[in-house]
Length: 217
Image 1 (cartoon, rainbow, N blue to C red):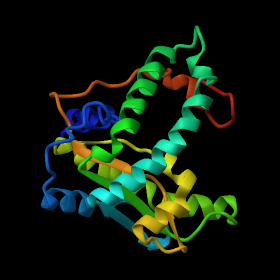
Image 2: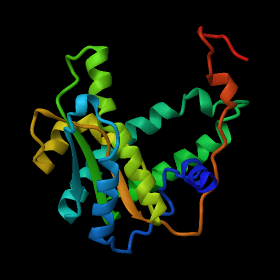
Image 3: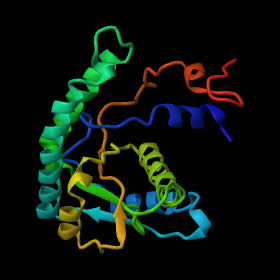
């Protein structure tokens, strides 16, 4: 296995918003292959209760985008007081760029050629921590594998969840059963430009605990 290639893929798979090519069509066979790869991800108790809603219909994309924008307006107001946006925080500069690109995406979400809404069988509202972890743990690894597979083929995506504020309305648009949980909405398109860089992150040592919370090397 070429470790350098693997590491490059893992460290440069970004949330793509401004660099999504909104005019280039996506080959169905390419998307299908990426989903086949994603379905090799782990799944709790081998349940394989995952489902991927592929949305290309313009009216449905517009409907989902409208829900997303409605939620985004509230999110934008709340994010103004986020700790990472305060003066002196090392995350501030990058976070400001993220807010700017998120606004760009919200304004143009209806234009993306394709959306993916990953779903999982079961509901979490009344479930305990163990059940919630099992349900989400049975779909989120597959979604991340999908994003990696897309990236390797020149396709960008962004993990978004704001539409879930209106999940029931989105379910009506897509015909999703009440027993199924939507977990994200990925705008998907070919990306422009040649490559991506690793993001600036807080040092790993600040997030690693050895044997007991707070114990660091």
